[in-house]
Length: 162
Ligand code: COA
Image (cartoon, rainbow, N blue to C red):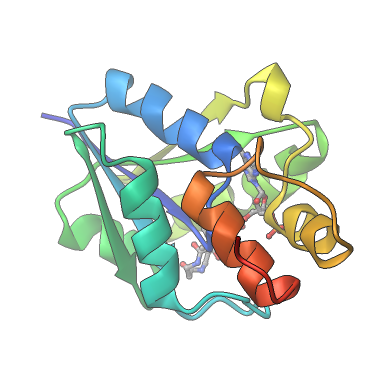
């Protein structure tokens, strides 16, 4: 049985992340979306909110679990008995960032492997900060994020949640 961890800040989860997680759930026996609690990013949503959005977004997929973690990713991956970490790759610009992290993780834990899923064309341009910027300026991202994320973004960044 292969268990794979999908780590990230997920502030918030977007349709691009959901696409990657659902596709991975067909490739691995069990997927754990692992939300990093100590992200250096200035997050809009606290960890409980981020976990809640992710759980709701993948509630239709039985072999995906959602949890949060602190500390080193590779230690968390080992602690849950997983063998693989995976991430999504959008345009070429993601490669350097991901390659760098994957090499460091490999150095720390040679027994673990990193796997990358190419982002689907329709979500190539998505990023969590872009979503927040657009909503903050009054734009509509309802077709790019799960419905409860859309409501929460508007509530936090526009002061409206209808
Ligand atoms: N679709 C849409 N957006 C995507 C995406 C996809 N398929 N793949 C990545 N993104 C976007 C995200 O929206 C996010 O955008 P943002 O920067 O504008 O917020 C960005 O790309 C990446 O964010 P995310 O996927 O949430 O992950 P991250 O890069 O914040 O996660 C960790 C980094 C948590 C994996 C890393 O910091 C880590 O492992 N930390 C644990 C501590 C550790 O072990 N450190 C050493 C690591 S070598």
